[in-house]
Image (cartoon, rainbow, N blue to C red; front, side, top):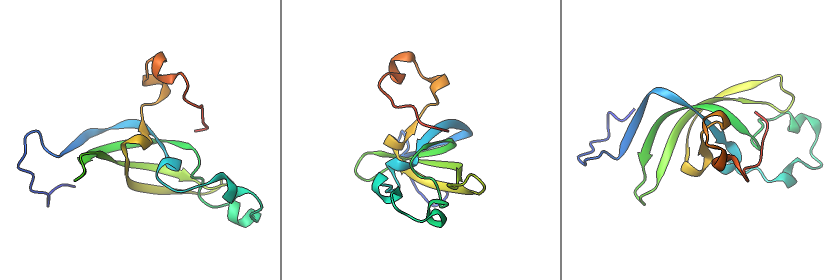
Length: 118
């Protein structure tokens, strides 16, 4: 994944997670999906990819951005609106879109976080 990134810093500007770690990603954090888009659209359109929810994902790596933040490389299966279709997604996303599953969080981290379907 990082074969062509000559990083001379210690610690490095990237970190591979091997084996990948189970995380949750909130697609709404990095794919624009305003609620207003869902109202009044034909059924055939609502059968598209569901982006306004969290998905169980595999975290493969972290990479530092040139502005000092971090982005995560994740893979997951994303469902369609009617539940009959799915696509595999491999995506870089913001740190804010990634969280630990509820069963790995401390109770104080769960409070105030809206529960969403999985």
